[in-house]
Image 1 (cartoon, helix red, strand yellow):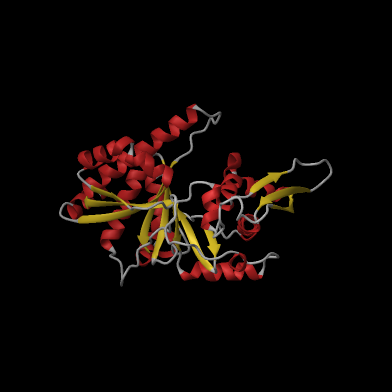
Image 2 (image 1 turned 90 degrees about the vertical axis):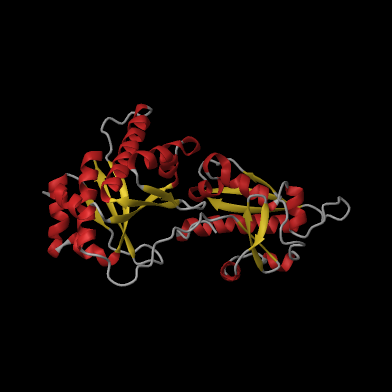
Length: 340
């Protein structure tokens, strides 16, 4: 009954379904040299577009007649199941986790999907065996909500078919502001009261709001704002290859005679926060060393002490920048703001 209804209503209907995926999931869908997504496009007949960008989340848009969309969905669900099976072969887990897909649906259609007193969503859960959850809040800066579906690939496909029927029967009301994932937070350097982001090997002047955020952060930090100790960048785009060039970037001369004498600064950090500064396999501390041009040594934990000593050596500008970056990591950890 449901099948025929979909194909009758769907043969001439072009639907667009949007999925929200993490970078790793997107990589799996794209495949080596784009081979997997190419195969999915060819075999399903659906258009599959993946949003650009270095975002932690990406939007995958599937457009086409309903039967083409279901084929594309089936291929994605089975690919995710294959990934789960592969990852389990390397782990000790015995129970297989379900496949999970996140749809992005205009909030104005979520009411029809949930139904009166949750009747529709309950019916979909019971008839397909899939778990379906509609997020209570809208996705940031949009009028869309995430609908999470999890279960076996077959249950997910049946569930998506039923959701498509609801969406065809209840079109969105009013204008929809689509959700656009934000780019991954890039490291930021501040100099001369201006914020710069590091993109690849270049420092690019950053929009005003970060400069304001920096000024706010500085009001709460115990050390001198960088803008007061370092001149502005000499140029807009500068390669950032080494700590020597990082010093140039901070307006310091790299000539031995002209460099300010190296000095040392010590910080104490609580043990439970040291991990967020070191990062996985030392990635964060290396990033801070590279960006600040300072030498940073973290003392070993001493028995009975709840704190660790950090020694920063370099020019005043290097030290100031290293302190700022360490402080930014701590602030983001404590407030959950995410890395600046």
